[in-house]
Image 1 (cartoon, one colour):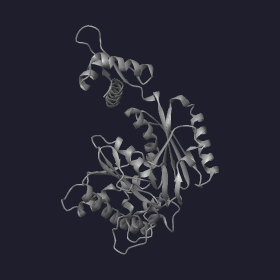
Image 2 (cartoon, rainbow, N blue to C red):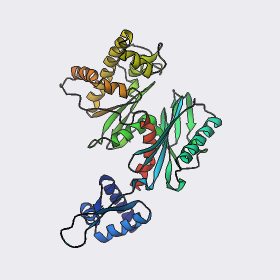
Image 3 (cartoon, rainbow, N blue to C red):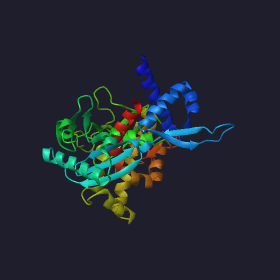
Image 4 (cartoon, rainbow, N blue to C red):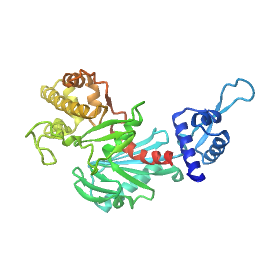
Length: 369
């Protein structure tokens, strides 16, 4: 490793150390990372000039001058994430600490047209202007897309939700005058969620919306599989020759646990369904009980295969969390090892998860540089 690469690697180590610490002195950083104090001092000087590091006050001294601590200036940079769905555009701004600084949801039906992409870009500019966000602090814009995304080719290969095939990300990005990255919405939501769980680096994220998808996260990285189709838990068979799924096959988890199962044909959205459930609607009670049976089967299968934590996300997660005891009872009954379902987590970001994960693409890349 040459001196430039070594310095870049030491810079990355110091940034990551500060990211995990509320504040640290030069000596503590040097000792923790096995670096010399002059090396740490020089790198901290550069990071301070970039506005990335700032003083965090003085600490108690055992004698002599009080040592000064430094910490990461989380607001020195920010990143934007945009989640594109069939009927909405969700925009978030996060800082370097993955804190959501601003959020906006726009109702607008997706169309694979230049007019739609220009509208999206215009909404982004309005969003940035409304919050007076300086463009020179913007790391980039991440896009969360529903469907199979080839991140090497930057191609949305297939999206049954948006009804598009082989859509180049550049078709969207050319309207956005900032660096753009993109990935599958469930992958990105999973990354955002696992960042918020202490001491968990590997987990399965199960996303439950009108479609059912997911992500496999190993050591804080997405596992994409041999062909990029990993995490498609919605299309594992749970009932032989069962209901027809949106993919055309029969008996898939999605055919039994899509939110459409709860809402069709009597309700416009899940909020209406759960309002009726709360009021004691017997039809809703029976449907919800059946829904939980099938979902528990799917979750238990995932647990048996991966034996790791499972994060439940999507628009259904807040309602599942409210009835977590019912789901836990079913999972306990299915588990052959009598495991308590304490491996189960519920989304922290709710409907902001995929947009937050999209913004995180640039933060993660920046902190790793």
